[in-house]
Image 1 (tube, rainbow, N blue to C red):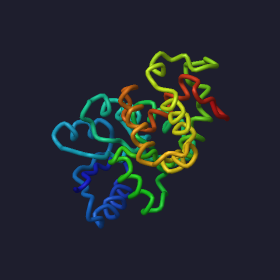
Image 2: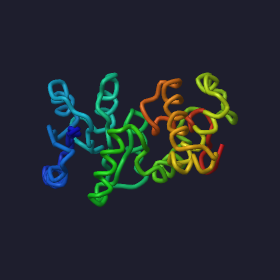
Image 3: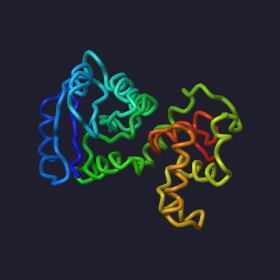
Length: 223
């Protein structure tokens, strides 16, 4: 199955570079481009897209607000944020807005392609350790100050699901969680799927954000 990709960046040269990389892949096709968030939303109304590569700093409508509007649609494409800076507060805001992950613009092509495939599958957080560092830095901006997880949504989880959620929030992959809990990777994947369903979340990145918001995991340390 071909992954339909949209490039959203105000730098034409950058879009050209990404397009060349993606065009060489048998399982990817660049189906649309846009120079800012306003244009991106307009194009998405008529063009089916699976994954959007979204710049954060653009004129007219930035990538954070564009991501929020795109992800508000139940059938929305996955959004992968591209940022110039590691630990960028814009990237944090984009994750909160519904992005499935973020990558640095100077990422090696192989990592970018792997990230697009991962986001498309909904199966993995992109650069989980980086996502964790980002949240550790910006967690004080989160509204929740509870010391123990009190969020009513978390009460829907079983003890095992809450345990898996904590490890997801700490940036562990399914394989690493399986090793830690002495479970099969397929079982971990099932638990993660149930967590997403019960909490109404799109993907693992939103699991991480919710874990911080509810105090299940605290900045700079484990839950």
